[in-house]
Length: 83
Image 1: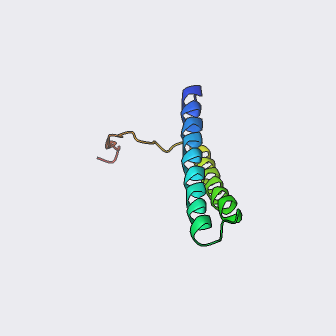
Image 2: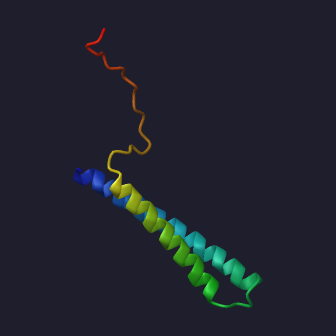
Image 3: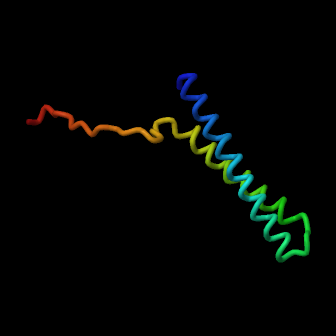
């Protein structure tokens, strides 16, 4: 894996983590204010869920090095010796 590809994966992982943690925090805030009498545990639960999902996505991204993200791959048929 080249350095530029590794850097792109880290950037994608960090951006995904920020979005998922922020969304979890926001949903936890809404639930805390509306249903749980301003308790803090929905904020921690939502942020933790977002962090866990981001970690899982990053782990999958780094363990599957042959997936192409957002690139068009042209389908080329191979000629076999059987013809």
